[in-house]
Length: 336
Image (cartoon, rainbow, N blue to C red; front, side, top):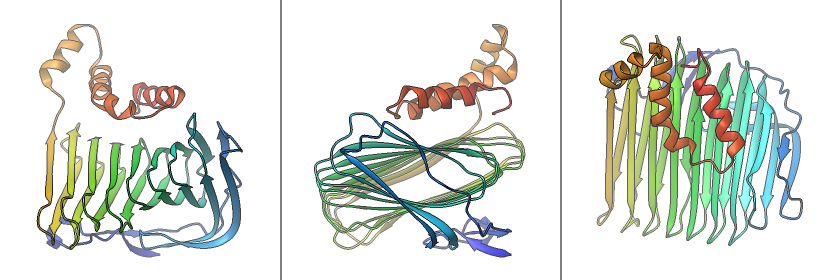
């Protein structure tokens, strides 16, 4: 079936081929998700409930049939990150994560597999709360993922996204905030290789006064992969004294890889600060040559130099085992 997915909030010239992504897909109709493998669950502070057989709408422009709805309510601050793991082998899943007021919580979501991972994550951050969601994708198949974020005043929500592999990966992020003094950040690391297709569309609207947002994207493209990034900061009327930034840094490892980027600032309000930018370059040849003279192969040297750049993102995760898992994947032969 033919789909037009992940449409940009503001269309640009069709010649750039970045407004949306057109695909012919045979999506699964039956979900194989049962439940998470859970680590660090404190049942006095966190409740997980499941409902099955639901139809769930995704921001990408599709419906997830037969989806499981997993609701996670966090009532008190967590001492350790809540870790949720599942196999992404034809999965249709909706995750709702919410905190009460005055709560600090980290949630880590990890998925592996080689088929479809169709996922919707909805988050709510309570007043005076801080919620960090870390999403680690190691699904070698197709991932269609959308994020919806809502929060109350004086809250800070962070999404750390680690997109490590997959033939097809489509991501969408939208916020739905109306209150003042809200902060949010997206930190996204990605790797594309072979003939992978990666499409990202992140749209943050500032509605309340004195709000802050940042979209920080770092990735490398290799072989004949195709990557598209759309990042939009939208200052709507009523968002005075707000700040928004969107930046992408692309490291190209192949002349055949295609990288398209569209960072945008939309402004309908005065007294705001918005900035955006994109850099696209290659591995430093002098650094690469130095490591090769020390006995490293070109592939090994490239991995080490990329790891040095990715490390600042990996260190955002508040769990040593998850950090090591990502590092091991990057350092694995053939991963990059």
